Length: 39
Image 1 (cartoon, one colour):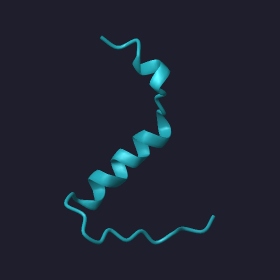
Image 2 (cartoon, rainbow, N blue to C red):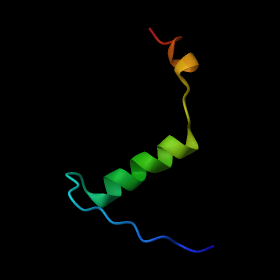
Image 3 (spheres, helix red, strand yellow):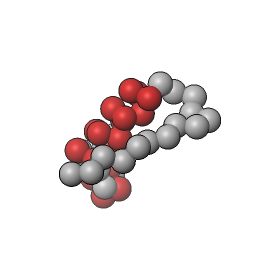
């Protein structure tokens, strides 16, 4: 698999934090319908 270069120009958070957030966003998707059940 080919790896893409990721550029973080103008970002205010460390690269590791953003990649960690993207990992969880892709790994555990949550729909708006599922959020309706939260208090």
